Image 1 (tube, rainbow, N blue to C red):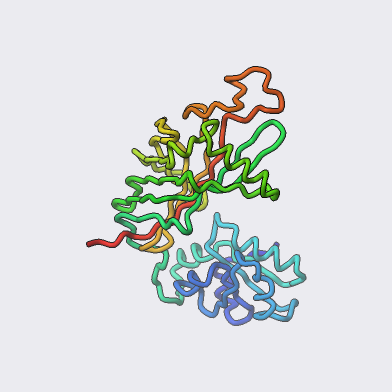
Image 2: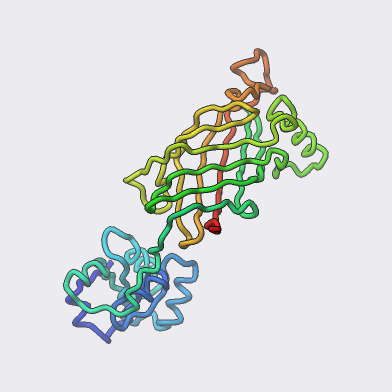
Length: 300
């Protein structure tokens, strides 16, 4: 793959198609003079380039953020594979360009920066908890509706969080036989599992949010330490989570973890508690995938 430096690129100004391969909002904020935009993160990257540069023998220079991001090298590889024959990768990207004091165009506004502080209430319509239960031979999966919750941020850092599950709204999504599906839901709701009539809600309360300094976007940035209450029993629970701001008024959170149901009094089919279960064994651990959307609470 051919590469090019900032000084070589400056000398070629106007003699090659210069493509900024980062998202359009980043292009609007800051881009090299004369550049056009085709985001390599989008599925329409190649069709977009085909619109901008229909001649596959034309000179093309791609650039992005610069090392260590793989944006421009990925773009160059895609173009070469698609049949473009004169592609060069400005690997240093915006970082190298700015280090040399060269001019850029754009608004200069950093659209990703926003003031994220305060209390955010959970949107129970778009938030969901997905569950997976397993045994030696099979597994079932579905959802539990969230009844409410909140996330509190102070000085840009997660301060507290809590969410409540509405155990009356357990759904199984994989069983297409309606009678068998209903039978399983009744089984989950009775005392063998979650005793929903006596304990209609479950709740997680985060007592301490530990930042993870080595995180990258899309990986957990906090470990939440707190307690889970299920079937009226409260047990300590810690798990990694991603908490991020969509904008100043909306937060999102995701986490995946497992709980040992037997610690909360759900003993049915546990190989640790019963002998000779055979095909009736049910795994002690239940997998949960929590997806939270929260909106800034209105102040009185």
